[in-house]
Length: 98
Image 1: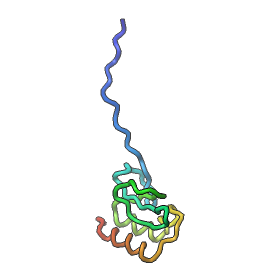
Image 2: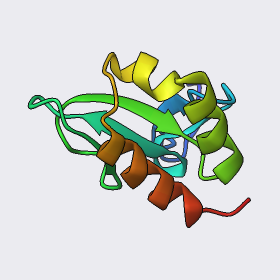
Image 3: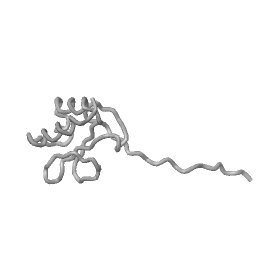
């Protein structure tokens, strides 16, 4: 009788996302999510669970600056950023490593 190969536990699935600025792929938890809520507000979503349309960026300031320059966040969220939303995103990016 043939013996079945014993297999270990199945590896856990890690959702992959792509940075809208540098186009590098990475795990969902490695990137920062920006979300346009159903009410139209744009905010940083550190939990990754806020409902709405999301876009992901690396945790590097250069990616945030590139996304702002190219308007990649606005394009990905299909929204125009208000000045106060843009200022909030810039404040968040200023705390990130270079």
